[in-house]
Image 1: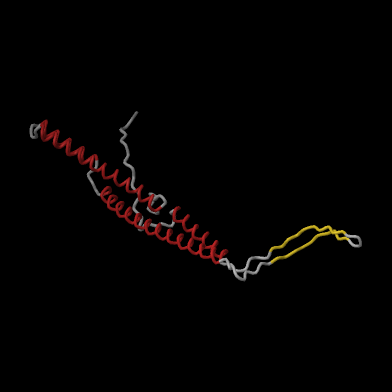
Image 2 (image 1 turned 90 degrees about the horizontal axis):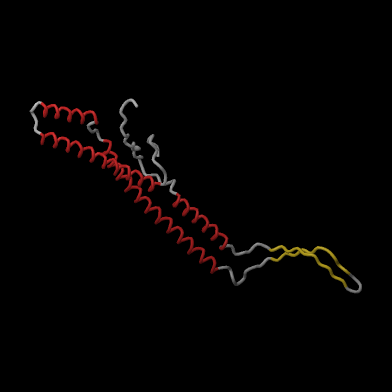
Length: 200
């Protein structure tokens, strides 16, 4: 096996310019629910019911005449006293409830998405800030080891330098992990993934 391989850091997608909620499936479902309740209310607000057409077969016989054939009938109920007021009021209340539920869900989703976007933006900047590379850190350690071998640095200086280097790397990894978590939370809040190309 040739060469040296190192684990690659996961890449962070650039934060979107705004938190677009058009793809949130829960909001879409609630919006469709409001449309369904509106359709039911339109049906319940009808005063006149549609006519009822009946078709049958009649066979009548007496001593002098007989009839055997199809019979058609039409009935059209005309509401004079009962105009379906109870069902209409219930449908209006159901529509108000569905609209209020949708509005509350939209506001809550907007707050969650804006908060998640702000958190991700800060962590993205912190995680992608210009930092010393592995090569620079290795050169610092190598130069300190050379100074130790030459007698110009003590063992304590070398250990402190190594501990500081490890602490810096761990802090960067912690920041990256927090940024990756914030990215997942933002994707959950907006209802779709943030693409690495920068489009959301």
